[in-house]
Image 1 (spheres, rainbow, N blue to C red):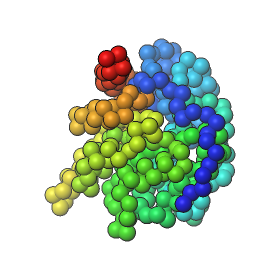
Image 2: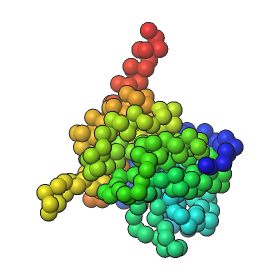
Image 3: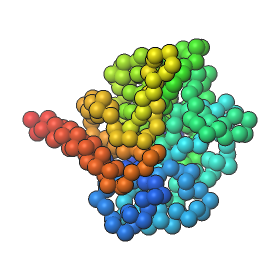
Image 4: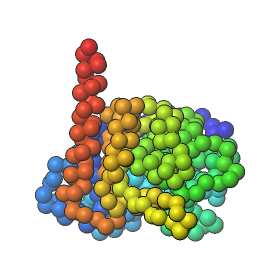
Length: 296
């Protein structure tokens, strides 16, 4: 079992419980020139390592907007241990950006020192749980703050897994004190691919641990055997079924900072802002319900 760690010195979230969008390089100039009405932005941590040209743009943008960091390369589930040099670079970016949130994935992507171009699923076992908890403790200690861990989208399961994914993620949060980034699209994709009940997944997550929600589009593939596979490609608008699941998530977790992700077939920033407006409407309705309940 993971060792008990000192409570983080920085709160998990300093982000508004509003709807933001993922910031990509192609939209830097639009944001700098037009200062659009966006509540907050999320950037991928690895895109701003090593003094890349976009770093100066981000320095300017973060003066006007809250920014969160979303990592894709720490490989929390790697049996090889964390890459100390990569973790140091993450800390450097966090020190420069001073993000309102820092998050990573429940996945692994490194084997034998080689980085793989994917976020791969874990065997959901006690051994893997110990590995992930140890690495989350290590990251939180290095950053001096709580991180959020995101549930994955998956297309296969290990036969020797013994823990349901939703229980695994809840255990990581309980043992390490980390928060949860609840990706509603990932839950829906994985539930369809594996025959899970997405409501069961939401019900297993401790509400106080959920610090952010992700929304994105996905594609549907018809396989040769007649079955259907959903692919989390972040290349389209949020599906109606995912919007419905998002409403269920808000009903359980309350108003939570929510992000629109879009990474392939990038549209104009206006399209992302339009998707964020739909999420903002749902958040506003939940805020009113909470206010009414408190006043009653």
